Image 1: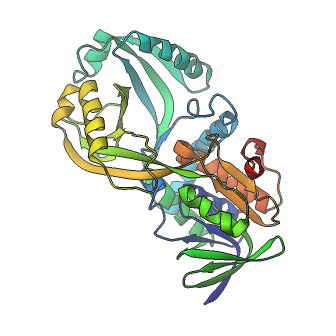
Image 2 (image 1 turned 180 degrees about the horizontal axis):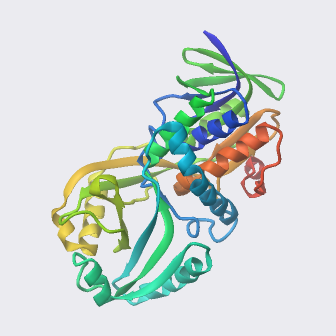
Image 3 (image 1 turned 30 degrees about the vertical axis):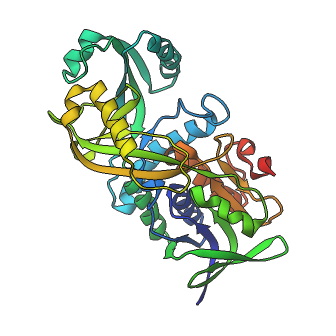
Length: 370
C-alpha cells in the first residue's frame, strides 16, 4: 500500500508530535509514523517537570532554547487544551530543596541567583522550624532549605497526546507502523518504507529519540544518540498529597495528579533494558524515606522505566541532515525532552516551510558530529 504526505515525521514522542502540530499549523500535510503508539516511551513516562534555568547545558548553549520553549509552553497550554480536549494538568509550581548537610547550602547558593534574576521566578531561604511547620512529615534533622517558585509541571503522556490530537484536528494523520528504510534519489528523500507499505513524501523528519541512531544506515551520517535509562516510583503519600515538590537525599518527591507523589529519578547506561529494577525501587524508596520518614510505608502504585535520548555533548540534534535536501533531525533532548518539545517542533516546521527559525540552531546542528 502506497500513501503520500508532504512531510513524514518518524517518531510519535513529544518532539515528533510538536513538529506535526506546527507543520499542520503552517498548512503542511503531515503524517506521523509511530511503531508502538504515541507517547509509548520516554514522553509517556517523564515526571513532566519543566525547569528552564538548570540542567545540562544550562546556563550555557541550551539556555536560550530552554527559556524560549518554556515561554512557548505557557502560551500554548490553553489553546492546546481547547484544540485537543485533553487536560494535561499543566501549572506553575513551587518546590523546596532540602539540606541535610551544610555543604549542600553551597549548591543552593548557585541556584538562588538564577531564580531571583528570572522574570516570574523566586527563591527564598527557609529555616528548619519553618520547613517542619509547613510539612511535618519532613525528616526532623533537616537543616533548612531553599523554597523556589516558577518552574512548571504537566502530565507528559497527556501533553504528548494533546499535541497529537491538536495536529490531527488540523489535518495531520498518525500511522502505526515500523520504518524499515528510506527511498531516495541523490540527496533527496522520496519516500518512507514501512513494514506494511510505503509513504511517498517531500520531506522526512527523524524524531525517534533513543532509537535515532537507527537512521544512520538510511542517511549515511553519524547520529550519536544513546539511551539513558531512568526509573520513577509513583507512591501514595501517607497523610495525603504533598503541597508542592520536594528535593533532597538524592531524590525528588513530585506532587502529581491523583494525589500521588512521583519519586525520581535514576540514571543508568543499561543499553535497551526497560525493565523496572529492584535496585531502583530500593534506591528511590530509601531516598524518599530519608526525606520524609513516613514514606517508608507508602503504597507503591506504579514503578516505571524509560529510555531518554542522550548525545555526547548532552545537546539536542536539530536541523537539516548534512548532504540531504529534505531530511531533518529532531532528537537527543535527553532529560529535557518535554520542556524542549515546543521549540524543537516549531524550529523543524520553520525549516521545512523555508522560514528562518527564531532561535540560533547552530549549537544543535547535526554536522557537529560529522
